[in-house]
Length: 396
Image (cartoon, rainbow, N blue to C red; front, side):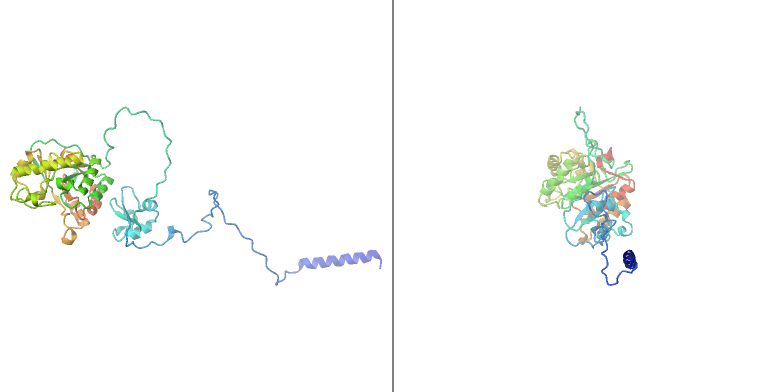
C-alpha cells in the first residue's frame, strides 16, 4: 500500500473512534458529580455578614415561642400609663404582646378578646422574674444649643397634666362643714385619711404621681411620725404640686364620746373630751405635720370617725380649723375582704356610680383594696369628664 494511503487510513480510523466516544451515554456506574453548594444570602445592610433571616427563618426564636401561663412565683409588674399599648410595653420588657395577654387575661379578661382594651391604671405582669428593668427606649441625642443664662430663679413646677391644683389653700374665714363642695363644676376630691395601717401608702402615692392625681391627705400626728409615716410625708413634701394636707388630730380619738384611738387608745380614755383636749389634739398634730410635710394644715381638718358636734366644731375653730371636711362617698376601704370588706372593683364601681360635681370621697392610705380601686376609678372618672383634685381647688 502506498505510504500516503496507509497514513490516511490510520487517521480516519482514529477520528471515528473519537466521534464514537463523544456521542456515547455516561456510564450508570460512574460517581455522580457533587452538587455545588450555594452560599446563603447576606444582608447588604449588615457588615457583620449575618445570614439574612428571610433566607433562613428560625422557628425557635423567642419572638415566636408559645406564650407560657402566668408564673406562680415572684414577677415584675408595670402600671399602665396613658399612651401605652400592649405592644410598646412588650418591647420595653423584651416579651411579646401574646405573652402579656397570657399572663394577664385572667385578671383582665377583655385583653384576651381585644388587646387594645388596655387601660391606664391596670397593673400588668410583664416578666416572669422579679425586678426586671425595662429596655431603654431608642432615641437620638439632640444637638446641644447654647442657651442664655437664666435671668430669673426657677419658679413653680411644670404644669400638671390632669389640670388639677394643690397649694391654693383658702383663708380660714367663718366655720363651714362640707360633705360635698357646691359650685365646684365637673370636679371632685379623692381624699386619703392616714390614721392607722399604712402598708400600701407609698405605692398609692407613687400611682397618684404617675397619673398626676391631686389629692388631700388627712394624717394624724401619731402616724405621721412613724417610720412609714415619715416616708409618706417626705413624698408629700416633694410633690406640693399634687398633694396637700389637712389635720386628722394627734391620736384619732372620738372627740364627741371619747375612747377609740390609734395606734393606742390610752390618750382617748376618760369620757367625752374637753375643749382643751380637742385643741391640744389639733395643735400637737399640726406641729408634726408641718415639720414633716412643709405645709400648715390649717384651716382643713377631718374629725376621726366623722364624730362631731357643735362643741367640737367650736373648739376646732378656736385654733384655726374652720373648714371641717366630711364626705359624701364612703368607700369602707379600711375593712379587709376577709371581714366582709369591699373588693377593689366594688370600691371603684361605688365611687363611679355615685360621683357628683364637688363630691368628696373618703379613702385611706392603709386601705386593703384602695390601690386596686384607684387603678380602676381614676381613669374611669376621668373618662366621665371629672377633674380629680384637692379640697383647695374645689373651694376656690
